[in-house]
Amino acid sequence: HEDHRRELDHFGVYRLQPDGTLTLVVSDMSRPNGLAFSPDEKILYVAQSDPDAALWMAFDVQADGTLGKGRVFKDVTDQVGQGPGLPDGMKVDVHGNLFATGPGGIHVFTPQGELLGKIVTGEKTANVTFGGQDGSDLYITADMYICRVKTQTKGAGR
Image (cartoon, rainbow, N blue to C red; front, side):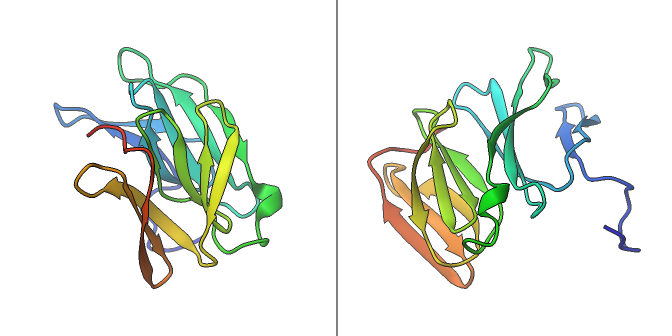
């Protein structure tokens, strides 16, 4: 991506340590975007918003905060254009299921990468979060809409 306003020569994911140290932890993804941790914070999921390689990566988080080698969690490049949107924002529920925005809406995956289902929005869907009184409301931003879906689960980290 050639943009004169760009300050860095690459896209990356950074870790900001409590002492203020900034460290590049992922430098080999073409368009890293949304981030989410598993409930135990031992896996970092990273969405890649690249129409030529639309996918989610999973990285093991080491004890010192560094990341292990990344692995493709789920690749949906073949779905690009079948519905609006690309991998972007995501959240994890208390069971470790990943609610990830992508082509067509929200893709819901088990921690093993099995697709449980989709919430089809019909719009470019950028972000998702859990909230509400008990954490079971799923809030979705889809183009010009803000949607709320009542779920039978709750967001992790509550």
